[in-house]
Length: 193
Image (cartoon, rainbow, N blue to C red; front, side, top):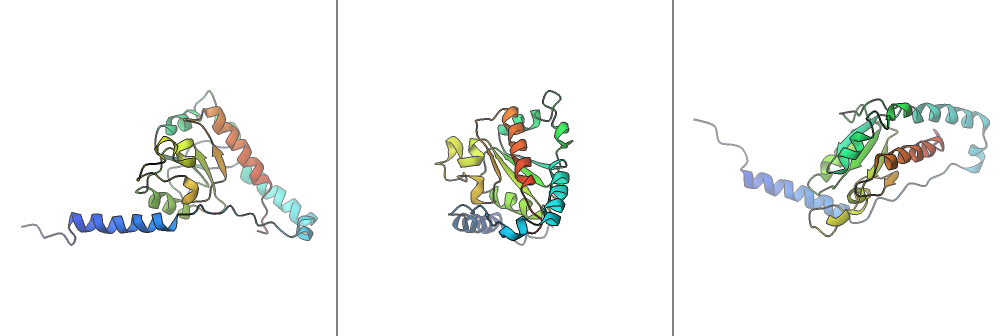
């Protein structure tokens, strides 16, 4: 005779529902974009600027994207790494399968409230510094499903987003352009922060 489970399926669903409801309540407002800049005196420092330039140069040429495809934008994200577009020339040889190896999360597609805790957990597991690209209108604002009860109206309500790639779905050229924009942002970062 099999032992009885500790929890019934209804109890598990109720507990999972409470977690999702708590996340929905906590994400009523988008996460503000951090705009904390260094004092003017530190920005003029020659030594810090040289170290910043050296470290940021290495970071911009060695991005490790974490593939996080949720819907149809995933196919465009994967096709951007094929031979025709060749993201390897930007230092991105392969998509990573684990957050411990990635420093760039590309959220491509429709994010639901049920999937939102997993996205937040993966983002928290990524090592610093880390960046996020929201790819497609569904990831940016919920897209055509924005009025649905189960769709998050923008990834920026769960995690901070660095670059937005509009489109439904965006072309690989748009994703390539977003990588170039992210590299510019990385070059203006500072280790003092």
